[in-house]
Length: 269
Image 1 (cartoon, helix red, strand yellow):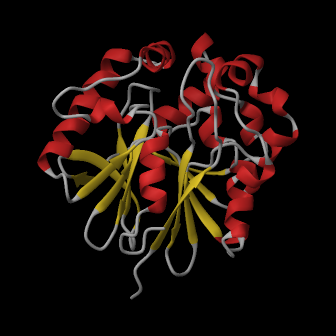
Image 2 (spheres, rainbow, N blue to C red):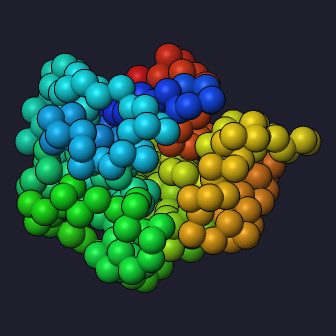
């Protein structure tokens, strides 16, 4: 049985006003018989029609919109067939995480139930701004996870796949149904924590820190800021308990992305 290969993709480089560059860190996992994509970043339709992303997002986050940045085109550049993406696992449905869904219309799309309900209803001003219904107007093959069937290092989790083990780990706060995604490697786990935090310094065990503009942004866009901070405390405890066994990273930190995308570690590329 071969070891699954994991590729790290930046599917929406951003240059926010007054801040350092951000990435949209997605994972492409080769299982041997198919491909699994964890988050999609922005998609081809977002590049073709940026207006659907909204004026506020475009002006404040200033995404670098180019077809070559989309997951679809990066997968092709790696020599894979995008049609082999059979499963997409979403940390949440924010527009910069789910924009590429339509590029993989036949894939099963895994999402937590609370997230699915919030995105379909869009019943608050915050939800109306963060969820872009045009990104799933094609009718994805939703697989909605509403129960936890596993325990992952003390966290409730919902298993998506075996070999590699892929689990959704609920971390509500940023959105109602926000989750992390755990991917098993031969001698460690990768834990993609989505938007649980934006800056690597927030995971510092001695002196957590975050630049003020990012800290303010996270507070403004969080569905429940207090709950998000509680989840961040849990992630720090996880890092303290298993620093070598679990590699924790977030969606938007450019330093974490650079380290993971360039390191030579097993079959991670």
